[in-house]
Length: 274
Image (cartoon, rainbow, N blue to C red):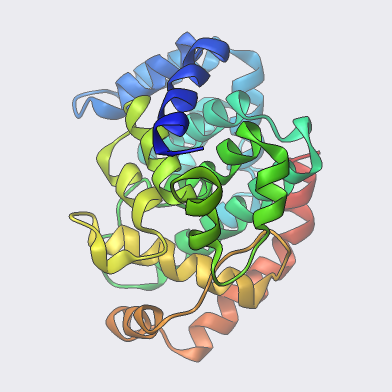
């Protein structure tokens, strides 16, 4: 199997699992700088399943409004337009790769959610302007692994999770999960910041843009192994991560606080995917 096989498979996903028109419209709003909260409100409100999931996520303790969000209007008011755009798009992507299809996919999504939370928490902690899509960047950072699992379960399990995961992925599939994920994100025309975060979350120094967002997702993934070790995590700590900590001025007290909050969210996160 080589990279061209994977490219054709990614293209085929959009034929076998047609991107819902709803997701296409969410993407259109996400890409339009002149879009309004009312457009997104109208879109979400007309899809009851999506509206319910957005409200559930908006009520998550991670956003600090647990139990207060009763409607999409409340969600936009409390969380802000940019957060709601990210949440809506995340829910649409998860509908294409649903957690209930297998235990492995569910756990990959849980890992993604944990990285998304850590990334959002770091974004709040640092005095820099992180991208508005940081939660979505974190949630989707390992979408390539979900795609590789769908492509070939046996090869995926043969790779496992180890410090040489990239080498094994290239040997088995001709490319890494980071490449596959960014290829998919490009194919469905996600915003560039998300594409770059997916492509470079293991090697943030190589990004051509969105340096802050990519760095935050990279450190969030590495920290997920420390805060919430699970068989699905592949957050290998490197010298780049040491440099990111210094650049973001993140101290041990801040990291410990983020880890403790994640610990309190763990059951909530797992319930979200049941």
